[in-house]
Length: 377
Image 1 (tube, rainbow, N blue to C red):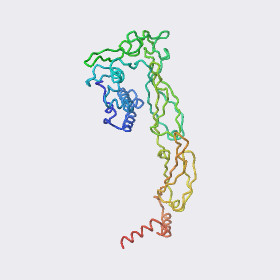
Image 2 (image 1 turned 45 degrees about the vertical axis):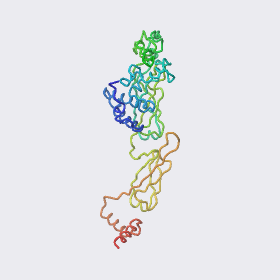
Image 3 (image 1 turned 180 degrees about the horizontal axis):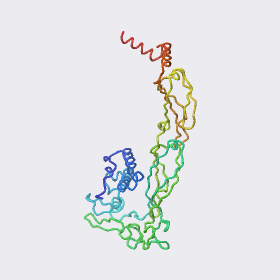
Image 4 (image 1 turned 60 degrees about the vertical axis):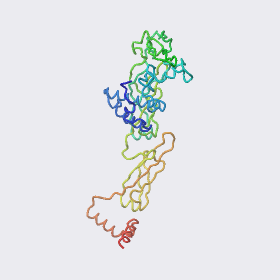
């Protein structure tokens, strides 16, 4: 425990950080040290594990509360409280075993250490195209993880054999020791040293998995990505994490998405934004514009006198909401483009137009003229 770093320090935070700050720090560091981005980098792999461990505690309100009050000892069932006045007891949970729950002193019923436990969850990042996020897609992810050993079916015992109940703890996985104090006799609980807290002894371990019941393998997993996802969307794949322990359920796989930007569209929630250049004559006289959307081209008539920066809305041309069929809108902003390359004939034409189209034709220019006149009068 002395070598384990403070979880807030691991995530680069101060104690008391908000849930949003914890989540943001985790995502940033997880992406930086993810094994996919740091192949064959053992240091990055260890940092990634440390980051995940810290986030698993600080993202859980109950565990975070225990950690804030008692440090690592409050969230590690095998950790002692060291110099905190509880030396010699197994861990935070053992305090309640020691006092028999809340009902008094003595040997209250403790929790079983060899019960079924869910396997570890796995997180993997995936980058997809803008259109794939908008319309949904199917992907296949290649993942190296621990899987249930096929030779022993995950039992850890060699085929034709089975584990035996530990004679020292009687299958409970725990041993209790009594300690006399001026306040009475207290009991502390610790994992059985003979079976390591499992309650069973494996005399003939499986040769393929070494008795662990699991082996490392590379698997391919198909993933259905629904329409409407965005960067930082998380897709849970139940049961595709690491194998459960002592008959517990397998962990889950969490796919964290990153969406590549689009060449034309900017996404804002379920809405799309698009900027289109128009000429002076289009803005002055109005025109039918061809507007691209994610699914098709549509015609949209802009009125005469359209001003630069005007935004038009095309309802229902955005992105489908990931949880329902409602679509966002497409917002089109028109930008006036001024010609930069003119020959002499074109320049004369514009000069002639400028003489013909007087100040009175411009709403803003006309009002500006009156403002200046009043200012100097």
